[in-house]
Length: 321
Image 1: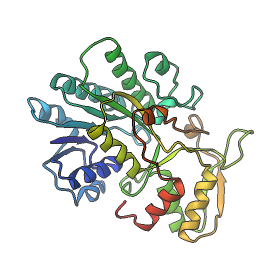
Image 2: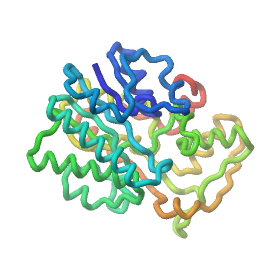
Image 3: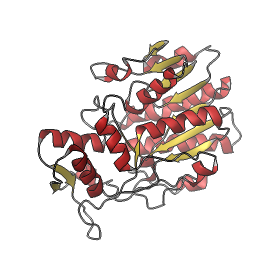
């Protein structure tokens, strides 16, 4: 049996579906409430659905878990209260780590490329206290994710109990079907598709830097199916532990992505640039690109979809992923 926290969310539901499809007994933890998350898991056979505030009591005394995927988190774009973010993204993660360590259960958890901040210190996923200390995450969400990364690495370096295998995955900009429930903060490509469905143009945030043209901000985007493949491989085939970037390793411009989306839906690339709100400008990333050297050296050699390939897959089969 496997536990997937955040298992009805965007990435978590894709992972849950892949695990269930190969016959794994699966328990997910998530809070459905009034969102459309139930649609993400409607076709999945589940052993149970556990509310997040009951996960620790559900784990108490539990035996026979094959592994834990801890992908549940509070998204800072929808939750501005830093105390709430701390409890969900730091406190809960520590508790799950502690349980996995005590019960000798592998743990794979979701970190974030947002921990790199504006990228001033680069995008190397070196798993040392010194390397992590150089990073400067800019948002409350990113800070709480980074706080747990640093805590976990310090536990290992200090020789304290740890899971038999642990992997923190620094996801870059994921996209694909299954994020319709995120009405306030859909993924960038979903946002573009929604704009084109409602009008004949797309809107991008203008650059605030004189050395970077509007729309030439460059980001690493990774198709959600590629993330799932990495997550499955880590559980099945790999004996590594540590922090690992999970991105495509490429950084197309926002203009290139917008034009690719327009081409695939058969609409002209009519792009309008608007100034970002102040809260966005404070931590706007102008360049992100995953350094995949550590993941490749660990043995993961499968290619990642290009953005054009991933968008085509998304557009052609949005319901299936």
